[in-house]
Amino acid sequence: MSHLILIVEDEQDLLHTLDYSLRKAGHRTRLAGTGMAALEHATQEPLPDLVVLDLMLPDMEGTEVCRRLRGFPATRKMPVLMLTAKGEEGDRVGGFESGADDYMVKPFSVRELLLRINAILRRSGQPATAPASAVFGNLRVDPAGQKAWVEERDAGLTHLEFRLLNYLLERRGRVQTRDVLLKEVWGGAADVQSRTVDVHVNRLREKLGSAGAFIETLRGAGYRFRAQPGRGAAS
Image 1 (cartoon, rainbow, N blue to C red):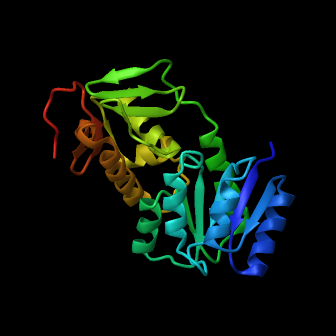
Image 2: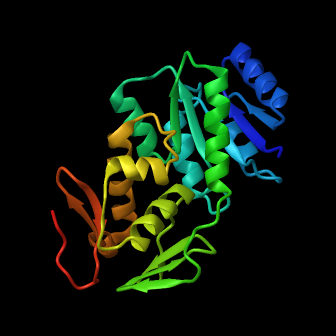
């Protein structure tokens, strides 16, 4: 199936290489060389199915582009793969904290890039597994619409954040290790292993506000969604 990929890269040679490789793989492409152009192209119909985003752009950081995409209702759940020469752990964590779904460091393998893109697209196209809406304390979850509300306030979750929440909620009362979450929620494709899970769980808790306490941390084990809304959270 052909998907529309927005490529955001200011190095023209690399931009054309990515464009050629993705089109050769059967995808359609849209190109941008600046952050502002990326934001403009990301909101044009038809909307891109995924964004390949460089971090170092001439007008703004790629992390800022990602944050703005997450702030627009139309692009809030649009998958983002960051592709950059900045490979320090702090850079990667910052990328995930800004809302990226995956992170690759240059130089990179085109084959691996295509595999990661396909993995993200496959995950974003999968419906949540819960058959009906669920209410847990002050949290309400709609799997079909991939939305969650806390005290009737939209939590504003991305697709990946919703998958993480729904996976934990469906298995409430049971500990889920970081390795299991990476495999089941990320498909094993994320570059920053256990730290990736920690960053996303922390961001998910922040968005859930008071309902974030339902997600308990078990030191040395992983995470667990409370079995009952009224129980105290583990620290």
